[in-house]
Length: 357
Image (tube, rainbow, N blue to C red):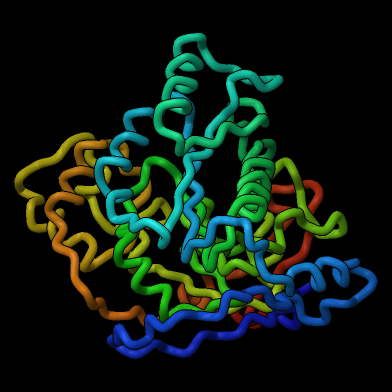
């Protein structure tokens, strides 16, 4: 089965080179929309969900422009503290909220040493920015892991506690130019929107788990997801979303040139174990050239880049590249069954003819 006929993603128009501060006018509070074409189709059982997602957030929830869910290994206290001392300082009260999501040491199946459990609980009490998930420890393998369960827990926690415009999932070994992202989202679609960086690999063309930004209505779609959605609990959320992103009516932004991650690293200096003076200009200019780096394993590097960064009132708005144009056609195509025994064994390709070349 070739999936060319299933692709309904709209291509965002290129943005202007400069975003005026005048565009920072207050946006509508009701950001829920129908994100499924033919939403009321009985065979998918989505009518009830679609009706629910049109409701505004409850008045008693904290309201923010964006919410960050930062996945964090229990023992990574140094990375969490590095983020707090660096890029999370760009957080402004009432604008962006964040939470580190880690393992609950008291949950069934938890596999934490007594020392790590004590340190984690102490940090939880002291800092107030940790959410301990009762899902057990560890990540498993590529074909059997807890990534989907962790993602769905984060989506549900977000919906239960906050009213937000955008929801971003990243890892703790990251550096995010938060100040720039907060500025840029004013030019992003406010509904039916997803941003990430796709793998340019034939049959595996999907966004990676390391950076996934959703408009609020898309986040709501997964909190909780319909029981009739094709989801495999044994593979990552990103792999499941690789299928769903072709089925949902989304505008996608495949940011190949500013997300510095394992899909193709864009820098060397962000991934070193320590800082080096030879990269002083690079540290200073990172947030002018890029938006995000993954696998930043040194808190020292985080703090150096933060301290050397000069922030600005205005930034060039990116030209949004859709998932159809981010990778060359021969590096596209998605086969859900490649890493899943539960998802369909089909080829989803934007241009079926290109797949055979």
